[in-house]
Image (cartoon, rainbow, N blue to C red; front, side, top):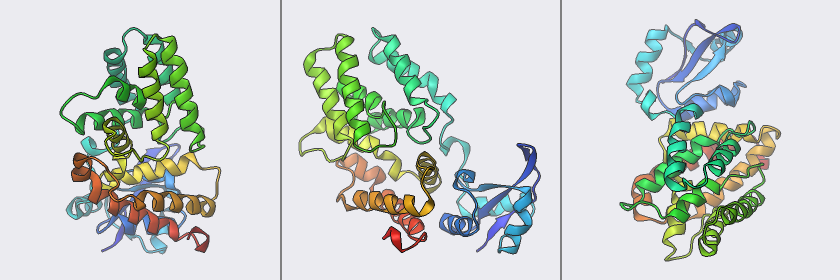
Length: 301
């Protein structure tokens, strides 16, 4: 039961890097990193990348120095190793998938598809980017045997098309954008209105009973919460980076409120498939992340 660090032998950015891992629990690794000021952006699924200049300091703080081979062996043996197929994809990896998906969805409006992809690649996005869009589209397919209706797919494409880190306002502006762009593309008024309604539903993720389209979109949007811990904590890392203008203490207070609101849903997922696939893991992930942010002081309670 230890936090391990290997020699700084991995060249990048004009220096060499070590890997910092736990051989027991991801929570142990996160707690050690937070306590020693390892920046959240350095986390990568099952380890932190730390520069050579910090190696001796982290060893002095309690990290156990081992060879790179011993570190990998113990990481794999712990079950915490996240292999490449299970990692969050790179943005470039999902772009061809998105291009094909838009062509299948609305081939008469290729320019609109390109504009949406451009929006989802804005430089201030870390979590709410093309990878999130691709995951929502994939989750929509997983949640039911039949293909998602076109309004649900369009709502997925538009639900964070406007993203400035202003919850509620972003979704409203995204819904307004959907209404304007889809009307210009010639879609029927009733379908345009349905897309805008679904986008606004992602403000609270609380679809009414019997709202099958709303349930499917809300569950897909929240599917990240039920992913394995390494991938979940990449999501948590990326959300933190989107709010990097705030101190840890201020961010923690707001983040705990968000986590409490999500945890208050019983169930979190409204579909039977969502509950089966993601409910238990989401409860664990939310509780673990909440505990992490509570360490930043009483103002987070």
